[in-house]
Image 1 (cartoon, rainbow, N blue to C red):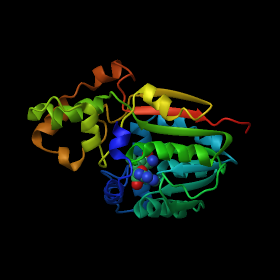
Image 2 (cartoon, rainbow, N blue to C red; image 1 turned 45 degrees about the vertical axis):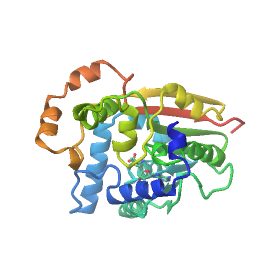
Image 3 (spheres, helix red, strand yellow; image 1 turned 90 degrees about the vertical axis):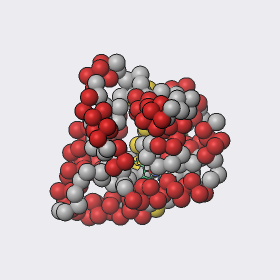
Image 4 (tube, protein in one colour; image 1 turned 180 degrees about the horizontal axis):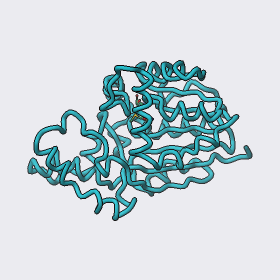
Length: 280
Ligand SMILES: C[S@@+](CC[C@H](N)C(=O)[O-])C[C@H]1O[C@@H](n2cnc3c(N)ncnc32)[C@H](O)[C@@H]1O
């Protein structure tokens, strides 16, 4: 359903591009005064708020392998693939994401190919990469299914896709539903619709574990599990639109301890590791 709504909408993809061009992922709250310090701060915050990223990505497994990252954003994970010795290529829909990632590589004296490209039409031949990594990206693209097919196409036989898309149901979905619909006397609008309309760029999708498995059904195997995220725990600074007094109050009273104790089942992350059929 959500895929059908979003499919083939160039206008929606333009809106996604404009959103991420204006606020590259992970840069909220950091001051661009001194560039190296700026990037260090982004990196420190990212892995402090999301300590599960490194064990999920396992950047060290990229050493000597051809790794593609789809949707580099501000380039924090990408620089970790490169630092760990991967022969890395990065793409993003926005020039801003590409520019930040290139600047970061230059500051560390590292080199890798980074370019503007669309996940739904990757500019690489079939069977190019050992690993394709994409964290928090493919659910933003209007035709997520096409993007997953592209990930599969550009992987070598036996290659690994490491992907995070948003999970449903989640605490973040319920919070957005509460703020945008329940509190405005429209409780019949679903949390999924709240994610679609209000989570980051317009048209964001979220998948159940079964839907995630189905999305990656073209792979020989796919491990799919939800992950409680920093968003579910409200760890990062709120977006500008959520800085009114009642948002601040809810932020400070939010029962993080209880959410933590309830575990990963209602986490916003859907962590997927999928292997393409064939011998490596
Ligand atoms: C939430 S950010 C994630 C960035 C980075 N992976 C991270 O975890 O910080 C989403 C990124 O996906 C990119 N993006 C969205 N749709 C895309 C598409 N169709 N092709 C390539 N990149 C896309 C956006 O430009 C943005 O940089």
